[in-house]
Image (cartoon, helix red, strand yellow):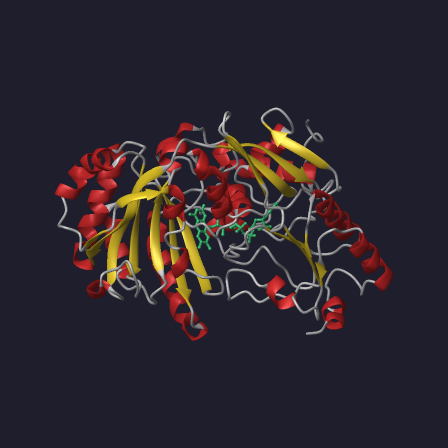
Length: 487
Ligand SMILES: Cc1cc2nc3c(=O)[nH]c(=O)nc-3n(C[C@H](O)[C@H](O)[C@H](O)COP(=O)(O)OP(=O)(O)OC[C@H]3O[C@@H](n4cnc5c(N)ncnc54)[C@H](O)[C@@H]3O)c2cc1C
C-alpha cells in the first residue's frame, strides 16, 4: 500500500493536504514517518507479529511538546490515534490502520531519587530501562516478568510481576503521572491533583490521555532467589494443589508463578528435558538463599524432587530479563486471561486436560499470584478491581510459524472455555485481545461506571479509543456526566 492509498482509505477523513502535513511536520522535533519512507516498516512493526497495520503517520516524539502537537493535529483533523509505549500489547493497541501513531519510545529518560527511593520514568521506557537505572542504587520498581515490556501499557492496566505479593501492583506504586489530555493541555495527576484522573490511570488503561512520564515508588530489592523449577507432567495435579495450599499462608517475600510449558531447546535447560512438556514454578523471592530455602522447605518436602532446580541468587535485572531471549519481537501471539479467586480441585482437573498439551514450544500457561499486598487496598481504591482474586491467569499461544496460528489459537480458546466456569468472571485488561464491551465491563465490575465518568470528563470526544475502550457518555443521551474536571 502506498502513502496515497493509505491516506485516501482513512475512515475518518479525506486526504490531508500537503501544507497541513508540512505544518505538522515542522512543529515536531522527532521524526514524522509516513508510508514509503525507508524506515516505515521498522517504525510500524510491533511485538506481536500477527498484527500488521499501516498507519498514515508515525511520530517518534522527541519531547512532551511533540506529544502535544500530535494530540492537537489528531483532534483538529479527526485522525484515528494510537499511542505506543513498549508495543507489547496482545491485540496490538499500540498501532492502527490509516491513522496516527504517537510513538513514545524516545521519551526514555529516567531520574532516580535514591533518598526518596522514587524514580521519574519517561513513558517510552521498557522495564529493562528502569532496572538498568535503579539497580545501581539497590532499588527496584514493581514491574512484570520480562524486561522488554513497556512501562506505560503495563502500569496503566495495573501491572503485576515478581514483586507484586510484597509491594502490590505497578499501579499501586505510581505516585504521579504527567498526562497530555485530549484538549492538548498537560496536567499532573496524583492523590492531590486531578485525583479522579489519577484513580482511573491506575488500571483504566490508555483511555484518558497520553502519559508522558510516571513517578514510581521504588523498593530496596537488589538480589533475589529466583529461577525455574520443573517437574514431569505426571506430577502436575499434585504440584498445582501443593502450590495453591502453600501460597495461601506463605510470606509475601515468597513469589512463584505456576506454569505449563515446553522446555526451551537451549541453555540453561538440561539436554534431557529440552522440548519436553513439563510443569513448573518460577520463583522470585526476597531474602538470602538460606532464608528462602528454609521458607519453601515445607512445599519442597511435600513434592517429588524437581527434574530441574534452577533457583539461584540473581540480580533483579537478571531475573527480569531471564525469558527475553525466548520471546523475541515478531512472534505470533494470541492469549486469553482470567482472574481466579479459588483454584478448586475441579478446576485443576480441567487444567490437566489442556495444560499438559501446550501446542508449540513457545506456548505456555501462567498463573500469576495477585494476593498479598494487592489485597491491602480496597476494590474501589483504584480502577483495578479484582483485588480479592488470588491469581491472574494467562493462556498464551505463541509460535514463530504463522501456519500454526490456528492450532495455538484453538488451544488457548478451548483451555479458556474449560476454565471459565471456575474463574471470577473478568480478566486483566492487559491479557485481553479485542473481546468486546461486555467483557471489558466485567473486568472492571463496580468500578466501570466511575471510569465512564472520568472518561467523559477528560476525553468526551473519545480521541483516545485505540485501547480497551471505555466509551464516554454521549451528551444528553447516557445520563449525567461528571461535574467537570477536578483539580
Ligand atoms: C512478553 C510479554 C510479557 C508480559 N508480561 C506481563 C507481566 O508480567 N505483567 C503484566 O502485568 N503484564 C504483562 N504483559 C502484558 C502487558 O502488560 C501488556 O501487553 C501491555 O499492554 C504492554 O504495554 P506496552 O507499553 O508495552 O504496550 P503498547 O502496545 O505500547 O501499549 C499498550 C496500551 O497502552 C496504551 N499506552 C501505551 N503508552 C501509553 C501512554 N504513554 N499513555 C497512554 N496510553 C498508553 C496504548 O494505547 C495501548 O492501548 C506482558 C506482555 C508480553 C507481550
